[in-house]
Length: 357
Image (cartoon, rainbow, N blue to C red; front, side, top):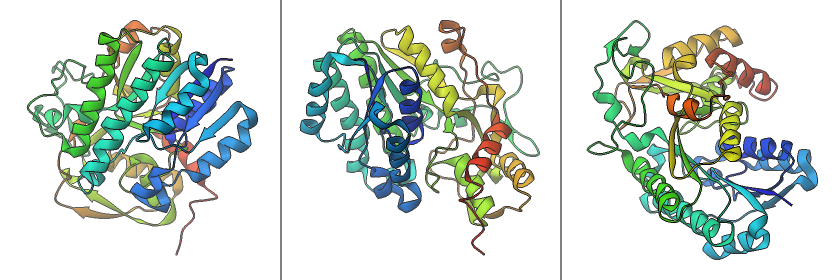
């Protein structure tokens, strides 16, 4: 028996990981206690996703409602499957830098402590399993905001002759910048994953994600940019747009493209790797541009409440370079761009996200 162990299995990347690795013929063990409901309320709950996984996959999926802060509970799961564990995908996290400032203890215990718990159990019970960690571009703090950005009509942009015009590489420093409480907890997790790779010679990778998105997202205001934007337009909700004139740029990568990258690493793992993960130049958008695409798809006008003050530590412009990953895994290719992503989110939710008034 070969087992894929997925934490945060009800979330966007977690649920896609469950389906993807089950499709490869592995038995999948999921760990998720729906902490997103606690973080973001009913909008963010993953209960619907977990129910659908159980219904769709049957015996190929086994679920454990264990909190990743619960060391004893985790150990029982890892002991049960032991060396049968062929890969660990760690996607469970507190994902919002706004929320983290409200409960720093919880944020750090989940993101840093929880990651250490998963790492150590992997080392003790399944040391040969590749360990794939969902990190974040917030480990770079607000350093991207020091780039020489140019203001255009609908976005901020880098000059074409800048070394990072095609995307920010892993060479960007994580030091001497404002990270947010969330960013700091994710830095701790990111560095620990690297350290287990080097110190214990484990096969580990930190994927520093930009905007990871897709129709499986439980779209909430504090987490889920494109999915929540589309939901607001479809339902007639007011979207609170914070700062930078709505011209801040994000690169977006569809969850399926994320999972094909994970599969590539799983099949040819390396030790203590770090990869930026995003849509790059192929798939990026400003908020203004995303609203225009969503309005065109839905035929509805967006309701926007502009707030002058930007969120603390928020990136004004961020586009990922995937060059390092693509050099090591040349068969991997990105397939989605922003219009395709928004169209798919719309089609997946057209009967669910309906106008309330």
